[in-house]
Length: 197
Image (cartoon, rainbow, N blue to C red; front, top):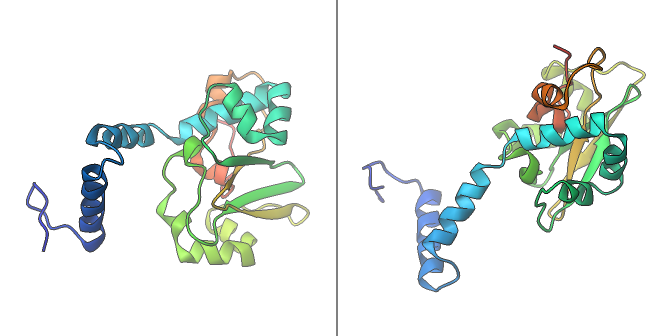
C-alpha cells in the first residue's frame, strides 16, 4: 500500500505515475519544474479556447475558410500552439451534422478543449456513436432532422477533429465575445447544438 503525503491511499496507477515520473526526473529527462510547468499548461487548456476559435470563424469568413482548409495553420495564425497534431475542422450546416469520437482510446483536441469528458472516453460512447449515431445524439437531446446527414469522424493519434457548429439563427447582432459564450465543449464534439440565448 502506498500513501500520499495527505495520508490517502494511492491506487495502482497513481503509484505507478509517481514512480515513473520520479525515475524520469532522476535520470535527467526533465526536471520537477518542467513537469510542473507542463501540468500548469495543460490546466490552462479549456473549451473556452475552442469557443473563441468557433466565434471567430462565425464572424470572419476569411478565417473560417482557412480553418476548414487547414485547421492547424489557422489556429496557429491566431497564436494558438497546436503542437505536432493535425487539426481537421468539419462544419455542421443545415444539411450536415458532424460528431467526433475516438474509437480506439480517447484522442481529443485537448489544445482547444482541455481534458475530454468521462463519457467521451467510455467504451459505450466510443462503440455506439459509430454504429447508431442518431440514437446516441438523441440521448444528449440532439435530434437532427431525417433529411440531415449525420457524419461521425474518428480522431487518431496524429489527427484530431473539431466540429464547427452551425451558428444559431438570431445571433447576427452579437459580438464575437458574446458568441463564444454560447459555444460549449459538447457542441464542438457535436453531441449538442448551439442554442441562441
